[in-house]
Length: 194
Length: 194
DNA sequence: TAGCAGATCATAACACTGTTATCAAGTCTG
DNA sequence: CAGACTTGATAACAGTGTTATGATCTGCTA
Image (tube, rainbow over all chains, first blue to last red; front, side, top):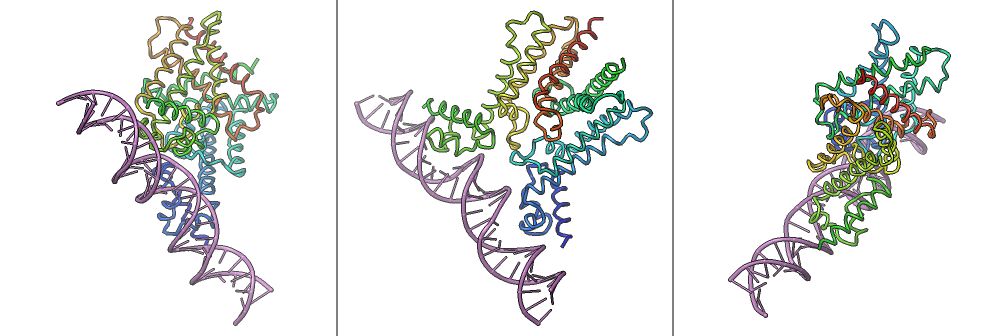
């Protein structure tokens, strides 16, 4: 039955969104799906397969977030809108965000299929960013520009829920991140517009 | 015996440096220390206590790294030297770095004593950075400046061992990070030197 | 010094984890 | 219809952190 596979995936995704990776045990998933544990090994590759599916789900959400730029007046606005959506996504889907960045389950390493989706997400960001840069730039230069923005945004998001930054008020983070990202983006544009 | 406590800590630290958090089981530690598992509960607070000790060890290494600025000619050089050491530390002590940033063991949350050390590390970085800024700035502005540099450095370090950035050659990372950090630091200095 | 209280240790067990061997039942194909 | 393959469940294995039950050893007090 293909129905069982869907049931398992729904149960896993729900459980994951509710209680994060800690509540995601094989027995808990199967119990919620109304099946025995063995289905997770028939339809998926055990817990690895479940986490792979959620990892892919996470990066697909990232791609949707950074590309939701329908009403962007300029390429620059599109980048800023995408990064803003990225920040919101990280806050709204903490479990997925933590999973795709190595937190969650230390024993998990993404399969090649999963890492391919992650690479594609990076490529999409690179494509988005490259629209504000001269076309003549090499692929490497474009990737490095995209990486700069990603590192900045992810660095902030990662430090936001770290215990050492409690002195920074919670409400201030969004503005902090967006001003830093905007500054950096404009510096990138200026640097390459000589 | 205070000797047993030291034995356990050494065994845990060695085991952790060798095989990371995955190889760090209560039984493995006690076996290596030549004791039974119960000592970990008498002398520490179970595995939580062990991880707390390693977490604190990690942030102490961070503090030593960013403050090793003996031969710095200027405050600006001191900051850059500290950040350079930070990057090296993250590469050399991956286990500790991952632990203090939430990877390692998802069930672990640092105790108040541990988070205090983390906050102190952030304060030291703030102090280091504030030397390149006008004294008149508020504590909050100084913290935000330090946070910007930390987010940038940590964001890069965190993305460096992510599968999605395989297109960036491994040898390029150090230069990428340092140029980004330098650019950002100079922008900070210029912004406040009006 | 004698005796008792508390710290320190070991063994074994409990509840949980992911995984799999064994076997039963259903389904599809030649 | 018969056989092969997929799907399902039960129970067990090896691993995890933790703890209840004792035994031994240490150190303070009467």
